[in-house]
Length: 318
Ligand SMILES: Cc1cc2nc3c(=O)[nH]c(=O)nc-3n(C[C@H](O)[C@H](O)[C@H](O)COP(=O)(O)O)c2cc1C
Image 1 (cartoon, rainbow, N blue to C red):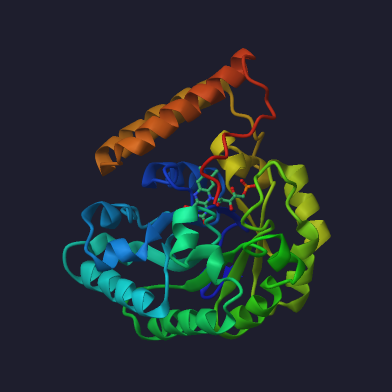
Image 2: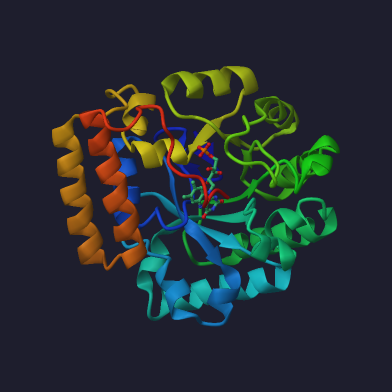
């Protein structure tokens, strides 16, 4: 699959995952078959205010793992400043920022704190504002010295049921056709929980109108569900979040390299390797907490003390 000038080895993409997608986890998913990986959502304001802990979240230390940064912005001015900041840091104190291959904008985070400031899904119906934001990103991509191959946005179907019924997502496809290299669609509106089935029919509608690659997202947890999503929607790529948290080996299954459920020895080895790498790259404590629990759950499934179909908790769902 091609996204902008990026040739992805597989069309299966690890979602941006807050508190989950540190560099060591991204490597694990990539080594198992993910064609592209994303950092967790980075607040542009944190970058423009030079917030150290925000800047540290852009942990793209390893050039061989294809990684993009996902930004959360309130408006085009903030985006412009944040992109300039990334460039400055790449040229000075943070040379590893040169490993970034893509930039994505988050229009899906359902957190009230994000919606209150008019960011995330609150922007979905603001076509002119979105155009200005996309234009800033496009212009920057054309002039930056950083090797950014693709610029994308990740959207939901609307802020709420009404917006989804009004199909606010369709005009965004036109904007993406004109200004971006691809569009990821999480097929739910922002008030929907992960317990509601994703509306894949909307993905098919989006795909019909798109000239850029469309990445479908929502409820892909196995090879069968990925195949069904592609058959029913025609999407070019598939983004996986909870399925990858439950078992990064889903990428091995999707790419036909082996089963989606690892052997116990594979979990042990992966955890050891993840821990070694996370330690040497200085991953934040929150990632250690998350993954200690994640690997424990994977082991429990072997011991039969957890149901094999249970998805991870969704309280962070964006
Ligand atoms: C723990 C967790 C953290 C998430 N963090 C982000 C994030 O930082 N940015 C984002 O766009 N979506 C985030 N999401 C949403 C996922 O990327 C994805 O859109 C959603 O979970 C639906 O996909 P799935 O059915 O494969 O889980 C998060 C989801 C979870 C479960």
